[in-house]
Amino acid sequence: MNILGKYGYAFLLGFKRTMEYRLSFFLSILSCLFPMVIQYYLWTSMYAHSTDLMIFGYSYRQMILYVLLASLLTLVVSAGFEWEIASDIKEGGLNAVLVRPLHYFLYRISSFLGGKLLQVLLSLAVIAALLMVYPSIAGQMWQLRDIAWFAAALLNGVVMNMLIFYCLSMLAFWISEVWGVFAGFGVVSSLFSGGVFPIEVFGVVVNRLLDYLPFKYIVYFPVNVLTFRVTGTAVLEGIAIQLGWMALLALLAQVIWRIGTKKYVSIGG
Image (tube, rainbow, N blue to C red; front, top):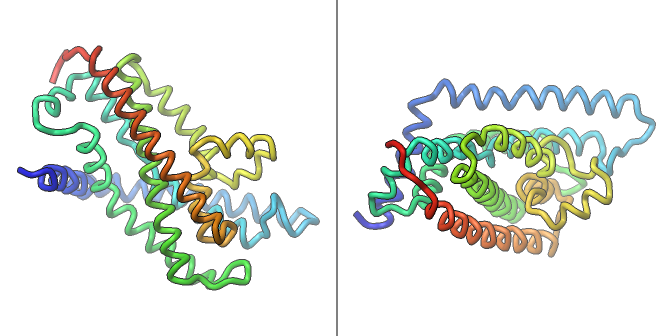
């Protein structure tokens, strides 16, 4: 079987797994609604009791659109496979891949993207509906070019987040119980990526620090590309930074994998 066939099959398996657990899939979609509702009432109350028309540089309409889009994109970029990788390492499931002519990283990314396909399509449909409700923002109408830049930024954000959590999952080579690390890092990543609220909330100092970290380019950047808060050459610069982080994270993943597999001891599988 050629490379395309092997990893295409892994992609298909990821998609089939999603379809097998349809209830879990739709519950994950529904769970996205609760943060949206909470955010809507929170910001509506804040703007209603504020004398300022702009809070953290956002009008009420811009803020509501931001939190709705950010909630959807957080769902789209979420990884979730780190638990599976940790289980493979801890329980010996990694053996099944190591004895086959498969590259574990490519196998995981193919399976991950296959599992994400339906979720991405549904989320993009909801985003399209939001754009119909908000036919313009900041006095501008969305053009095909804007949608294309957003799609590129979103795809890069998905891959970046996947690479970050892939690297994080490799800690299972050294730590037997990593659930606390995953849960804690997930909260931090969601906050600093702008998945909960705009990162302007954290103030100037933290925002300067975030300029040197990958998080803001996962959710915050794609949302702001779509809402015209990032335009012109800033879009190209942001995408270039995303590509740079992707290359660095991919290299880091390979280094950690090589070091980790040297101390891997098969105890099961």
